[in-house]
Length: 69
Image 1 (cartoon, rainbow, N blue to C red):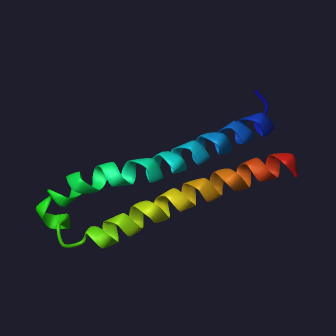
Image 2: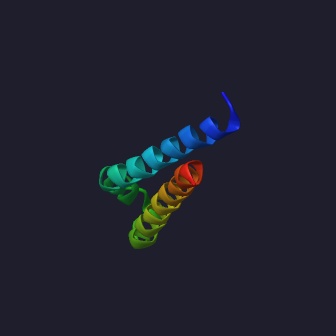
């Protein structure tokens, strides 16, 4: 597999993982709330998860866009 195809498929995987993060946040947050350390920092934890998802989707979109450029 050449490098151009690899970066395209890697971009697709990054987008899928980013969407998976968005899908899992509502499921994981009640479990995070049971941890005593994070119980009063849930807003910050949720914000960090969403930023992670945005970064993954953006990185994947850039790789896919550069493949067709």
